[in-house]
Length: 188
Image (cartoon, rainbow, N blue to C red):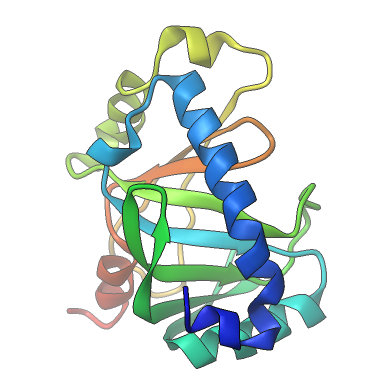
């Protein structure tokens, strides 16, 4: 995080990380999920304004390399490989997802979700992800679950998603890492 602290365009993300980690740990506890036992692929931010997204893009370019910029679900999404991994809870995360604002207005601008890779049959991703979560946590009114299949124009790998949120932070499950998805676009 030391390099981040020198990048003025990322000051709000630097100060928001502690809030995100605390909320992530609280959600994991409610769900009965042991974060240390899971493989985090990347972390994502959300913002309301294009100017914020452009500022973060400029700042992230100073701490990492833009390795993908694609239109997904009608908006640009930038992926950065960090020069130094970001410490988030038990993980060292090397990839950041920066989507431009879309139709959804998020409660908070800053860190929004972390994505976990669950290897295995894509058809059973949802069932495998739900099996990791406690029934008591899933039964709470403040917990919601959403499934989707985001896809870039040239992606060749099916990429189903199961997202679990408490409205503050979200944990998403995918069968592939972002690097594998991007590599599939190039036919690798």
